[in-house]
Length: 167
Image 1 (cartoon, rainbow, N blue to C red):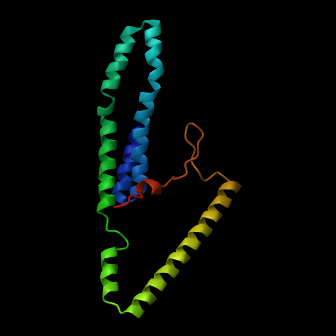
Image 2 (cartoon, rainbow, N blue to C red):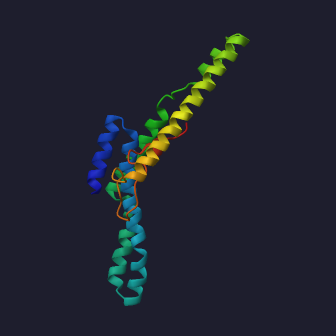
Image 3 (cartoon, rainbow, N blue to C red):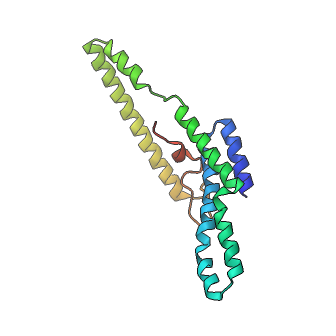
């Protein structure tokens, strides 16, 4: 399972789909965290049943868990993906906008500011309409969402929230 997520993350990274790449790499990291959390009950079991040989094997496993090749590969992939996200040029360059506003007269500046506010209001209204439509679609049918092993739905299947990093 982990090898597939690693290969899928590498493929998404090559395609430039950074959100899905991060999603796959972070799921590998989650597997290792789950492995570590599952061992807590085994500690008390080994001490209670006096199975010291198994307990020593467990401790050795935990010592090398974060050095496992799959974990290292996933961590390097996440770092590479985050570096690509940060190196991406931002969509709106505020320095260029500020320079353009400095070269405008007062009337042109006022007109540009008004135009910008109207565009922001329109984008906000569209986002609210889309969120409302999405909420209605989700309430009608939850088939589009993936469920994990605990039965929880995945609210971000494309990894857009992971890829949304402020520079």
